[in-house]
Image (tube, rainbow, N blue to C red; front, side, top):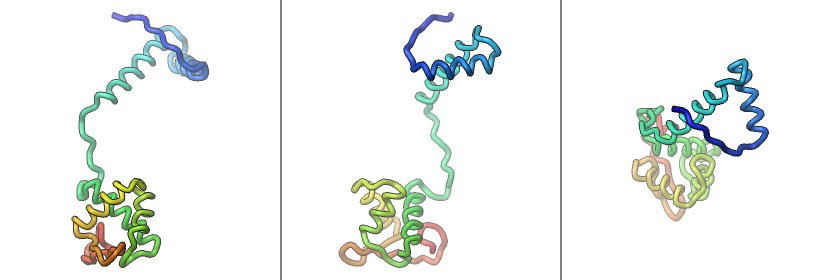
Length: 137
């Protein structure tokens, strides 16, 4: 059973919608309902989607991929053996965000995973393992 609904939208959006209906359905009858029903169904499906997304790099977690990107940024800026906390903050802001909690989170995770060690004050050293990946050069 179909029902009638109404809504106010921008004129430019309505014009684009009408152009799409005419182009797709070569007329107006039934086309507008079909496009709107499809759009609403798609929107609701996206909002209620509960399936987890596939990890694109199954060998590394999201945290490890982010740390890897931060380390690549540090190395691109010439910090191959050690770095200061401000340099880490700068690289982290380019990759994951500049919020202090975000920076501290990735600094703690990198240390917890054994990729860096605290030297003194605000200086950190990369832990060299000789393997490729997060700590590989």
